[in-house]
Image (cartoon, rainbow, N blue to C red):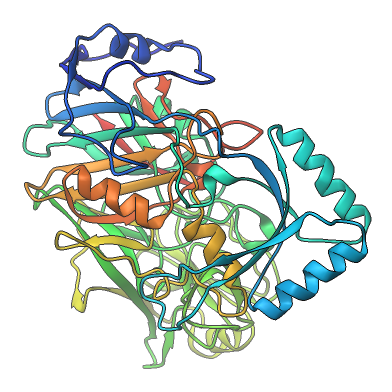
Length: 534
């Protein structure tokens, strides 16, 4: 059953530039209908910095509640110069590219060519080109590019990608579809809260389901998370998550996070790290490697205790550690992750109430479970015996100072930072979005255009939540890191952060999803969302 608005949606004047051609328009939803009936005012003062300045742009806005405004922006049009093609490989040196080109010609693929990718991450200290793309074909239809990809695969080539050149990060006319939620916390009488899928760490849920279950007036997807079992617990937040005074997931140390505080009435973006320690009543102290996740697998890395291959942040990579101590609380779910090692159940008073010689037991509604493997299991055997006390304390550091975690404070993982103190400041290398051994990773993630979910803070304290649809030629080509930062600056942000994007990018307004899913399967189930609830 459709839920009923508690407060009416009050339309306000929209901003438009002339008439706009809509390509592959999605069916009109109630929200879109409300936007389309509004008056249009022509102006050139609010153009997004996407493509050339002369592109047509249409903006339509409406008030969702006092202090909450939703704006939809359609900009640009499909370029006749963009086409589908096949990327055979992204290699680091020109020599490698020429060797591959020669092999392709020997195999009868004579129209392959090399593209130099000069752009590097802003904070990359290495000089020279990022790498070289070996590319073949120019097709108007994606199916024709896919056919070429199959031919290459039959000849033994791997790592092939069918791509659309409008998403390359080079000049294009678009188009772009951008959704903006602006929240004035002084006027909004409701709550802005992060919510877990299924109200637990384990499992995933679409933003539409999360928003509907919480009767939200609007919502946006939030942080990075574990998608499959090979990388940990599906639904586990791959970075910091805190809500209602509880630290649910540890930080990817040194990576940026969005911090919300209703008590202080302001938001902040900071580089955060966590330090968690277990202290036994016999005086022994042991580092707690993580919270509410599968021991041994650290998604996006940035952990502690000798993780391999690195303790630095490394995006979309799973580091490993065979001797981890993990704390589980009831927010994880009913049972801990099963496996070798041991567990101790600690009651609400910190007393060891139960000892288990393997992992995978029940989690009490109050208290917690400490699960250890390898050396951590030995520590539990020696220092967490029946009747002893174990005290677990957490410390959160943000931009060099300790952060207070209370009932009104929330923390959501993201990265990289896009803006700081009014200036564009993208620290992609520092936050692990560049792989030294594979420069193509940063090219695909940061330089190419993708769907994006962004959060920003304006000088007056208003919050911005922005989505940019992508991977949808003819509808919206997405944005790269630099374009995302410029968009946030043009919307008035002085601080901004990139949240989880790609197939996760989603925004809801009332009962409507206002974004177009980029996954072929439709809207992606995610781990958490940021909701506006009256």
